[in-house]
Every structure is written in structure tokens, then in C-alpha cells.
Image (cartoon, rainbow, N blue to C red; front, side, top):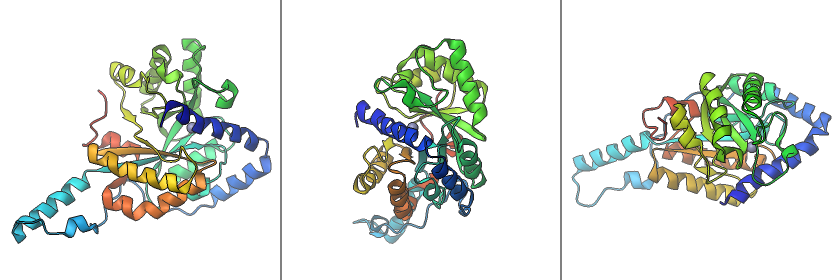
Length: 311
Ligand SMILES: [Zn+2]
């Protein structure tokens, strides 16, 4: 996916946000719906289900039964160290799919925009259910209007002091936040001065940063290493195209990524694709569990197998 598409995902969402902002009744209804969500039993990192994949049960040619057993155990062992972290962006405005996402039967991470009508209730509901909460910080894209970004956004024309003030206010506004990722931000995440201030504040407040990677020119890895803040990177956008078939295809990309790395971070959205993304994730849950342990971002930060944590 190119950079334009990545920003477009959030552009469309923000235009949609603005329409939604006009509809107080709808927002209130969603707020009530979220408040009535039943707690799923899953909290924290999950254990992978017993292997059902045929590749696990097929006897390798030329191996004794004992060797086969040990090969099978090795396969189980290596699978046990693979981790999938699902992150759902754009909470905070009573967006479509909020209720469905919060009912998913595995632990995940919700990224909540600050200063929105359901910022506090979404964060509190997710925290009660055992999910991670992170600040979804609106940041300037290369294309698109600044007013689409939402309140408290970080733009490259701001002074260091103003950026610091906005990042601190955003963290204070999202209860239970343990990390931060960027909403849009292809321009801001390419700016060393801006990211140095953002990441310094995150470090001071004990937050990790997830680079949504909306730009190939991101300077986040460089500045995070310089400052010494835990960093994670997005690998797969699940719903940059709003169709069930595309989202299902992107789940396949998650498995491909796991062949390359010990963990995969995948980002989906509430909003226009929300219900479809939640439905695909629900349907894919058994398969996700067969392929890896489903974890929250904070589990990856703590985990032994996170090769991408800097420094
Ligand atoms: Zn976003």
C-alpha cells in the first residue's frame, strides 16, 4: 500500500467523523451501547490452541516416530513464540463497529483519539475488559486539510513548546493510556524536530510508541533509538480498502509476516470499515490462535521475542 492510500484511510475517516460530530443522538446511542457491552473472558496474552493444522500432524518422510514427535514439538515450540498484536484505531467518537470490536474474544489494543465525545468512556470500557489503551495522536499528513485532524493535532508549524503542551494534554485526556500511535501523520512523522518532542514527552510519561508507518520517510526509528524509548512498528493495515474480501486477504498478510518475524502488529479501524473488520477478526479468531499467541502491545514490549524494540 502506498503512502497516499494510508493517509486516505484516515482522511475518509475524519470526513466521516465530522458528519458524526453533528449527530449527538447517534453518538449518545453508541455511548450507551458501548456501556452495555459484556466482558469477554479473554484478558492478557492468550495461549495458542492445540495444533489442528495438517502440517503439524503429517509425518515427515524418513523420520522415526520419536524423531517425528520431536519435530512436531519443535514446530509447536516455535509457533508458541510467534505473537500477533491487533490494534484498532479511531476510537473516541462513538464510531461504527465500536461495540462489535469490544466484544472480540481476545486481548487487543485500542487507540483512542483525545478530546472526543467518547474518548473517556471508550478507554474506560476497553480497560475494564482487559485491553490495552493507547493515545491515537492526530498528526499532520502530507495531503489533506488540517481541520480533518481533530482537536489537539500536532502540525509541523507548531513550536516545540506548543507540541509538548498538546502531547501532554492528549495523554492526560485518555485514561489508562500505556502507549501512543499516530493518526495519519505522514508529514509529522517525517519531521525530526517534531518527533523528538513527541517521543521525549512519551518517554517522560512512561509510554511506548507504535509507529503506524503512514510514511516510508518516517524518522521515528532513528529518533526513538536516540531518545531510548520502546518502539513498535505496524506491519499490516487490515482495512485500508473497506471490503470483507480485502480484510480477509490482509489476515493472510499477517501470516506471511509471521514467517519473517517473531511477531506481527496489524492495525484495523472502527468507523466506515469497523463492522466488517470486526466480523472478519471474529471469524478468523480460531485460525489466528492456531498460528500464534494473540497479545496486547504491552505484552510485546515486555516479551522476550520482540526483536524490534529499540534500543
Ligand atoms: Zn486514525
